[in-house]
Length: 111
Length: 114
Image (cartoon, rainbow over the protein chains, first blue to last red):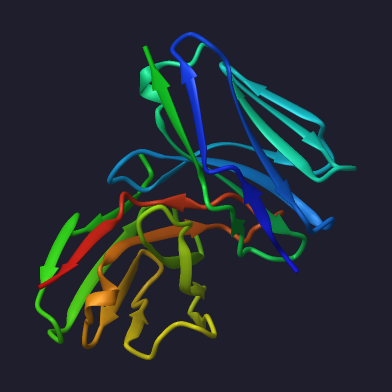
């Protein structure tokens, strides 16, 4: 079955890099997504990666995909206080348009 | 900018009093979703429309209904809200054209029950 796991909390100092990790179980995943949710708001798509890619970089964001270990990570360089939010990992299975979400990682950035 | 808009942002209703939440989109996406999200949890899919076809999740209570009168609009009706229905309700859209694409979310409606 489908299952997406994330650690619940991450605390970093402003200016450091943040790495948020995610594991998934379904090897037929087609797309893997990262969403950001700020308090009281909806989910904002940050980036996504096709399952035939290993890495994707977009400004301060780097996504790494290890298909063998079914492990996805999101690295945020030079983390700022505005990056404090909940980050959701999600996967879409080939042929499905219903993604499975993880429980979200709460990123806390302190001075 | 193309977007997903939810109204109202905050809704307060009384226990048992019907309430309707609305969602509109300018993305011309054919798939629309309604999610319920409670504090510190992932969004939980209630149902979705693929074009005009309604798809209910097996564990969505009968108390929750939906309407999609056209491509742009979708409504969530809660017939008799209970205290356990207090949550954030998120609308999302996606396009089924080509490979499965990402979902685009509205800012949500926070529902409180008195």
